[in-house]
Amino acid sequence: MPSLDAVAFWSLASLTLGSAGGVAFSRNIIRATLSLLGTLMGVAGFYAMLSADFLAASQVLIYVGGTLTLILFAVMLTARMSEPDQTNPSVGAPIAFAAVAALLVVLGRTLELADFPEAAPVAAPSTARLGHGLLGEFLLPFELGSVLLLGALIGAVVLARRAVKRAWERG
Amino acid sequence: MPTLAHFLAVAGCLLGLGLFAVLTRRNIVGILLGAELILNAAALNFVAFEHFGDHALGGQVFAVFIIVIAACEAAIALAIMLQVYRSFRTIDTTRLTSLKF
Image 1 (tube, rainbow over the protein chains, first blue to last red):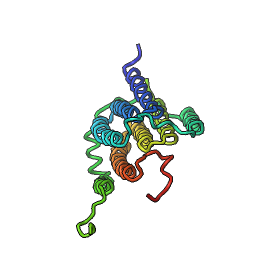
Image 2: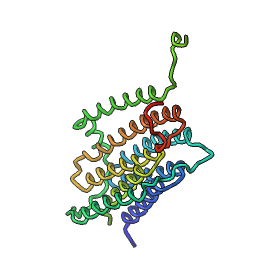
Image 3: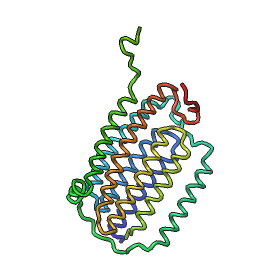
Image 4: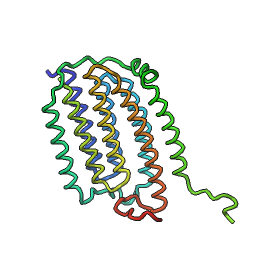
C-alpha cells in the first residue's frame, strides 16, 4: 500500500500535467483556457503538500478566481463563435517540440546528477511565518508590489477604453 | 515517497509544456496561457526548494510575488489585446504583421 504522500503526489501530478497538456495542445482556445483551471488547482494542491498553506489558498482565490476569470472574459469577447477551433498550432510545431525536448533532457540530466538531501520534512502551516516575513524582512518588495498593482490597474483601464473625443474635438 | 527531485521534475515538465504553448500558439490568449504555465512552474520550484531546504521563507514570499506579477501582466496583456481586436478585428499573430492601423 503506497503512502498517502505518494498517492497525493501522483494524483496531483497527473492532474497538473494532464491539464497542462490540454493547455498546450488543445485546438479549441476555450478548452485550453478551462484546462488551465485544472493546472492551477493541481499546483495549489502541490503548495499544500509543500507546507505553503496560505499560498495554496491565495493561488485558488487570486489565480483561479481573478486571473483565469479575466482571461476567460477576454477569450469570450474575442473568440469568434462560428470558428471555435481557430488556434491551430502553426508550422513551427516540430521545431518547438525539438527545442522543448532538448531543454527537458538537459533538466532531467541535471536532476539526475544533483545531490539533493533525502530528508523529507513534515508539512506544517506557515501562514504566520509568511506574514512576519512579508512585513519584516521583505517589506520593501511588498510595498513595491502594491505600487505595481496600482500602476497595472490604472494602465489597464487607460489601455482598454474606447477613444474618448472631447467636446471641443467633435467640431 | 516524493523527494525534491519529483517536484522539480513536475515543475520542469510544466515549463516545457508552457514553452511549447508560447512557441506554437497563434492566438494571443494562447501565448498568454503558456506564459502562465511557465510562471506556475517557477513558483512551484521556489516553494519546493524552500520546503526541502531549511525553511528560509524566501521561497514562499517569492511565490506570492510571482502571483502578483502574473495578475498584473495578464491584466495589461488582455487590455492591449482588446485594443488590438478593436483595431484589427483579429488576434491571430500570423495576421498581425503591421504596426500601423
